[in-house]
Image (cartoon, rainbow, N blue to C red; front, side, top):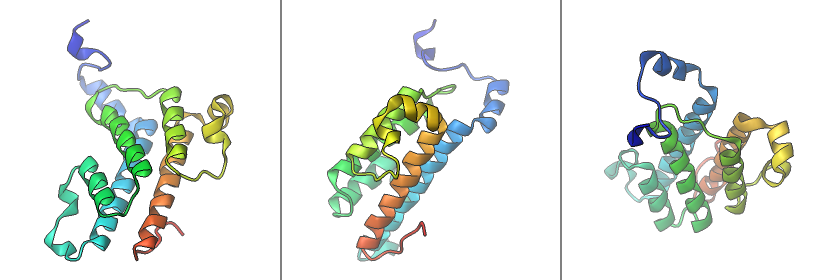
Length: 165
């Protein structure tokens, strides 16, 4: 196998069209977009002249690092968000990438270590029950929903409106 195609599929129309039905990828990409929107809103809240700076023009890691330097987020959550982005990049830049449950469970453990609050500790503490009860897509949704909720608390702390009521 050609080295450049390792862990990737060669582009073909049939596969590209099938991506529209990939609910796991959609859950990950949509969750990432929600997190990114919250980061931009927090940056705008914290800057003295938000109209003079276009936070949307920054890439995701730069938004995270700016939130850290502005004192909006702490290092634990920023490290986790950078890992989340690395995983998102695999979907975005590796045609045919399929995330495993183990990858998702590991990410969920990292979210918990970063302080993301889950209503059910099983999701991040018991691999087998998490797989049975939530599955890959369910864990992805829980990671993003709970991360977004926690980021809304950060936003509220700096004078913004809580987003998920």
